[in-house]
Length: 433
Image (cartoon, rainbow, N blue to C red; front, top):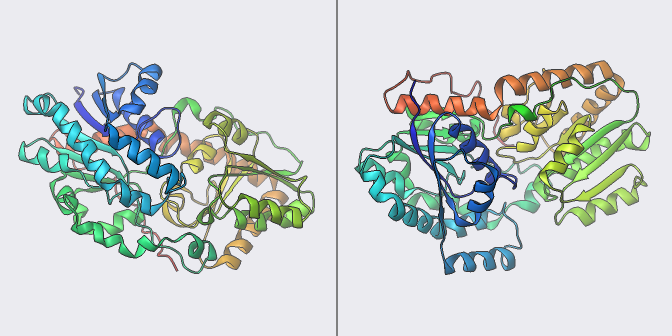
């Protein structure tokens, strides 16, 4: 089948960054293998993208001029560099609308001349940031596909981590539905791709054009080619993520404490954030400084190197949309222990990991401790789960596989393929307590 001429919008798109910018790059890069992709991104990303690959037909960088300087100052001074802030997402609203306005102005002639078969917006993934280009494309009968979008998870309020993290703006979330282009975006989109089953539920009314493809993925060459070797030494545990309340690194440490105190485990904490001081103080109080190591923020390549020498990822985040680190761990045979909620709950199953039900802090901590004890006592179980994690990642979670699924949606929209009924959540996720 012939390749498609795609215009991909990915304001956040960078080959060396993590989180959403990396999702944008890897997804667009994988699609460009089979299709003719013109990529539209922020101007700050273009040099890194062009240095990394020549796969795209063209990379169009959009510069917001003085507004970029205003945003950078506010991000640094007002939001303290917290890119996970819900208030920051709301603040981004006018800046992102202007990004799409300038992108449309730059490409309008090509769009109206029929240079593209479809438009796909990959990033931002937040469902509250609309796309005026979706509305303008519909007027010109050019199919527009939105996604993956991911977000809207309710806070599990039985956890003090949620109480500490939840922002005042959370109660105003529905207000965005009344902002310009909000409702029109979803009405105008020919198809919508969501990154978690919880987000699918939120947009259930649009189910006929709604499809589920996990937000994150891994390159095939980054997936381990051989299983882990058995070892009898201390369990090598790892946590990767920002040290903020909802990531629940404190739960991970408390759950691992019995094994750490018994000399049956070592724990490496990759990441930094406002909780680090309190976490380090707790480790010192428990006398575990020689068994728990804090590295601070490290480069993505270093994350992968640390994962290669780890046995289990202890990642009980209580409000995680995508959970890219879970994919990265599985790809390298690291057994994931996650909360059964959001993206990680969609990704992990009992054949290669542990899903901890959301109940309350005590329940999560006890369930995590029990799972870690099982891994320590049965190294053959650890090895089996490790092998299955690699196999599952290779079969279901590669970026190449994601690109094929996205292509199936695009071809259905264009009348070139069947309805992709298989791209629906296998099960609905539990609600937050």
